[in-house]
Image (cartoon, rainbow, N blue to C red; front, side, top):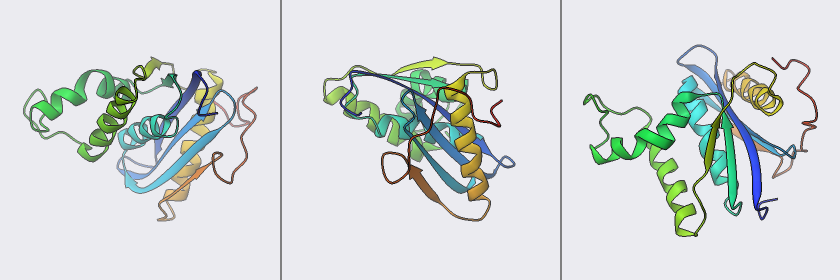
Length: 176
């Protein structure tokens, strides 16, 4: 799957309280997926980690399209993170930038794609909880991961490892 020339994934984050136990996920057009739990995080951390893992888990995909319902994650990646770094990890107002560790990893992932001669990831905004099947699956996986995080466990799961892909021909039963 990672040698495909075109591949679309949806990403999402979830948090039980904000801050609180958080989860992240990505789900691909072919049903492959990954999700993870963060015992103490925010919804934005979950959104950024979903994006980061989607990029990291598909290093050989030439045209990677990431669909996200988070304008924050999209804008951070496409507009803000380089400026934050140039300003010494300060926002445009001079406040300290949040989630610097994740932003540094996002910049590294983007730069690794560029160094490999691959085009930049294309980010598309989708409306959450509006019947978008991949987004519904990403939400389902992220919510499950945040429930796992509520038990105080940081972990990650993936169909690229020992778990089966999911059937993305229809939304999950609890899909919104």
